[in-house]
Length: 161
Image 1 (spheres, rainbow, N blue to C red):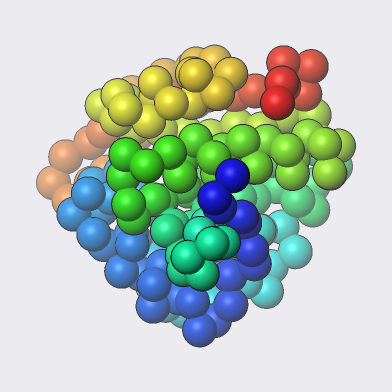
Image 2 (image 1 turned 90 degrees about the vertical axis):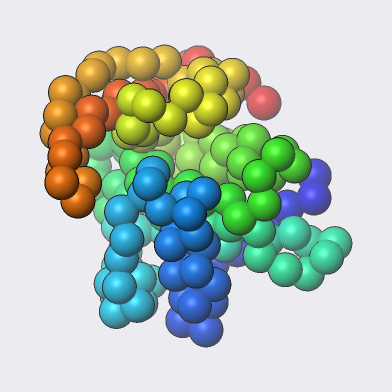
């Protein structure tokens, strides 16, 4: 594996902001302010991590997950943003996220939502073992229109390396 997950620091937030506003990512993720990202670094419920190319010593994306303070042992993959597409970094990151959630933390469930027109991401999540569990129609307001999302999930007993 070329990448590792490491805790985001406040000094990393400019990279995070640039990554989420990049045109290849901005239509698929909500935009947070610097302060919202900074504040999330202090929350027990949230893991905010860089996807870091270990050999080249540089970030290639970031991930935000939630649900770590709840009793349900269910983690939400809130955001996965890759800055260099087509190199397998997203798939490597998902494998590491699953390992963290299921093996290291012993959680029962990992879930996410994805815009229903983001076919590439949906395919990757399905290849990683996630199943579509529901379709929320026109539930996200983006600029001047509504978009729909799929809820996708993976249970611990479905997890494979």
